[in-house]
Image (cartoon, rainbow, N blue to C red):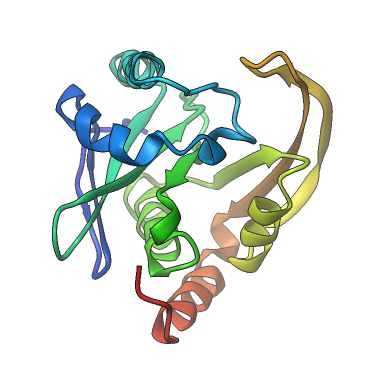
Length: 199
C-alpha cells in the first residue's frame, strides 16, 4: 500500500493535497481557538498553524501521512483540513484524522462527504483492511459523530499522551474494517441524501 497525493471529488467538498500555499486561507478558518480544544496541537497564531502544516508535509514526505485541504466543491473556498495518517507498511491500514472544519461548515454535509470520500479511497483504492479513527475521550461531539457514521468503539487508551497545552489525554479508539465497508457506505450515502443545513 503506497499513498500518492490525490484529489478526492465530491458534490459538497473537494479534498486536495495540502500545500504551503493553503496557509493564508487555512488561517482564516483556523484562528477559531475552539477548533483546537480537543486536539494534540495548540494553534493560537499563524506561526502555530505554519508549524502544524510543515509537520504534516514532513510526514507526507516520509510516507506516513497524506494531508488534505478541505474545500467547498462549488467555490474552491478552503474550509478546513483532514488527513490519512499512522501509515505503517506493510500493514494495510490507515487512520483518518487531524480533521477540523470552520464552524459554519460543521454539522453540514461537508464532513460526512469527506469521510465517505476518504473511506472509499482507503478501502477501494488502497485496499485497506482497517481504518482507524481516534479522538480525545472528552470530545463527546466527535465520539458521537464516529458512532453515527457506523464506526465501532474499541476502547480508551488511558493517559495516551500529553497535548501541546500540557494536558494529559485519554484517547478513544474507533475502527471500520473492510467487511463493514459496504454497509457503512450505504449508511453515509443515506445520510447525504437527507437535507442538511447550508453553511
